Length: 76
Image 1 (tube, rainbow, N blue to C red):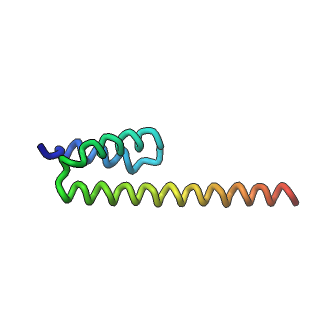
Image 2 (cartoon, rainbow, N blue to C red):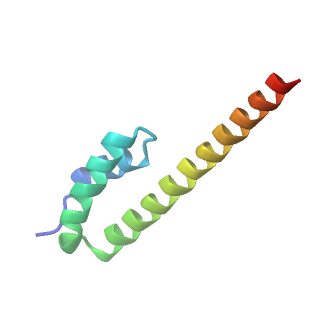
Image 3 (cartoon, rainbow, N blue to C red):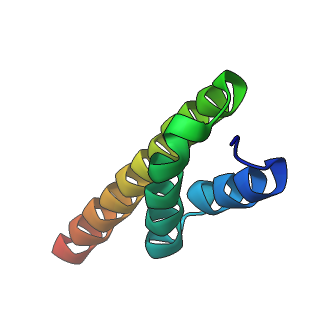
């Protein structure tokens, strides 16, 4: 039985959030539903995971740069 569009949409929204626990739980649930997904849903899921990972890396990079800048200012 295919995954309902409503269920899929709500889980994808959670995956896209920057809050780690809800995103992880939604991704875990989507992984279990993956065999039941349509090809389009599977593709959208993979894209959402990739985009969420890219956003998290950008935030991590920005945080590291901000920390480094703060450290450099403390040395002055």
